[in-house]
Image (cartoon, one colour):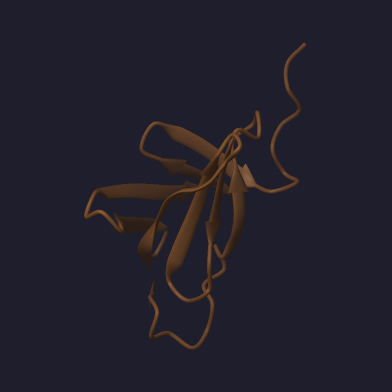
Length: 93
């Protein structure tokens, strides 16, 4: 199943994804767009995405491309590991 801005039904991965430390927050919007914040920098990266199965293809508004895969409820986006907001592991002591 592929979701993009023309799809009327949001894909189940829509929502906020965050790193364990909360520094990076990537929101997958139901219209096929994403908005990524880094620290206090809101909308550090924005662009579009498409989903095929558990794979996500991103294209930043500047033309940069990236990929991600969802495995066991975790989003592996290039070198980042993101969790659904509220489901990230507790920081180690």
